Image (cartoon, rainbow, N blue to C red; front, side, top):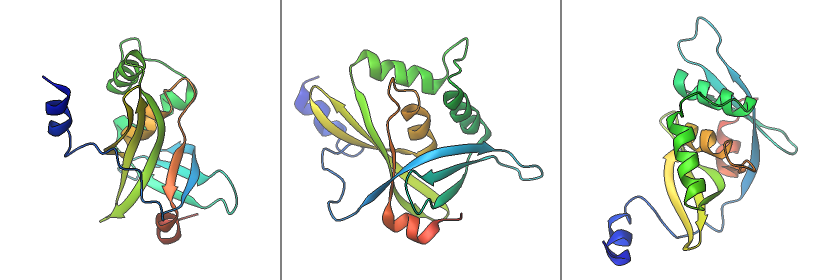
Length: 158
């Protein structure tokens, strides 16, 4: 498969276009992973790294909460999880995650993208927010989590 064909085939999922220049992003930290009974799903709490310290509460699947909690604690599965496998593949291919960007919120769902850098250049790939966070936390130097200012203004909970 030639590079031209490969680039054409992935054009629907990947982009080399930078995020909108007019949108500003804020650095966020994962401050906790929670599971409060009787709620059916766990959550992750994200908070701005700098003032005004607004926060987002994101409902996630149990397996995603476990993966993120393990990454926060530096734990590794005896057999690689999907996130650990993908993080190892990125490292082996010398692809770095520059950032995970929360780009929109629609119908109760946060959308994100991975900002990747390799020897071939920068690529943006849409991803689930939880997958992006789980991968970013598994980098040698954890990649920053960025949230569009417009999303914080509209959806912050704490």
